[in-house]
Length: 97
Image (cartoon, rainbow, N blue to C red; front, side):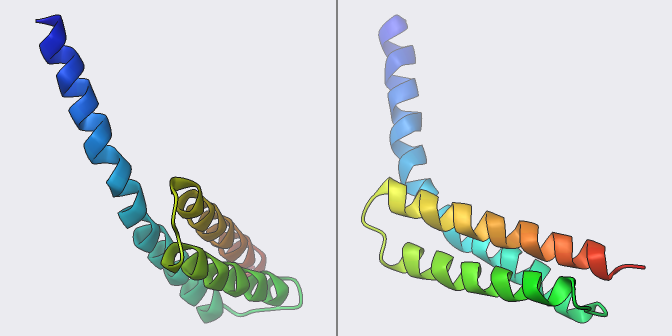
């Protein structure tokens, strides 16, 4: 019984590792959607630089994902995309009266 549990856990872990690579596009798309939303708000001097930084980070995330060779590369892409999302969300907050 214990061997079956161990095998099941190993199987889940083996299947989960490739899923990380396919998670990048989802997180990148979420960031792009937030950037579009931020651009749709009335931007101001505080929000415009944040949107520009978010766009730059999404571009870097795409590059990391496309040239990824390791899990660390994919993790870097996800981190940059999430950071871009945070900048876009901040821009939305600052643009909202």
